[in-house]
Image (cartoon, rainbow over all chains, first blue to last red; front, side, top):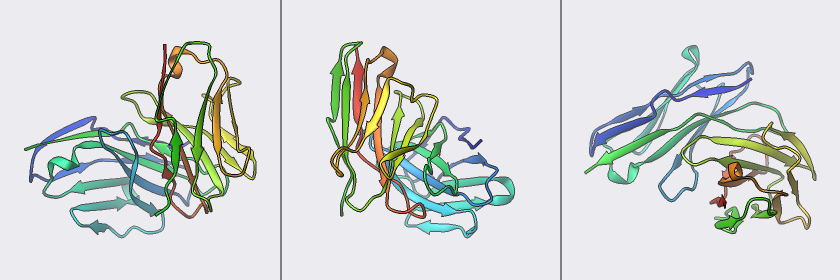
Length: 116
Length: 113
């Protein structure tokens, strides 16, 4: 069975601080995909990144960066120089390789509150 | 850029009533999903649908739930007799190829009174 754990339920920072969100996953699949989604107060799920299990290169996109470490089954997400608009719940998710029924398993989410 | 759409955005219903939640996936998508999120909790998988049949369903997806894609465009989730605990946000998602990312609709917020 697949499992995603986001140990931090809520993080509060002051604007311009960096914030790192932890994600630890469990899977027996050798091929799998990891995701981060953002859920702002309006409720929709906004896709941020997808990473497959064979690509351990870290990625940076603007103020966002991701650190994938297969050895520790972690896929952490860092927001650099946080802004108030970054306030949201962030979900880490995992899917396996199955062609049909390739469902996402989500972590419990981390609420990020960025104060001005 | 094409988007997944869902209607209604909000629905209030009485316990025991039937509800139908509608989704219009992106036109070239082939795999479809429903997820739900009880307020303040994580997003949970309900069911996946491919080639006009259910490919996988969770324990949550009991006999009270059904899905169909009646006209090749709309993808619906029906709850036959709603319970208080069905109150949640319901998300539709889809993609064309398993190598791709699932894109989510904006959700339908269901409140059962």
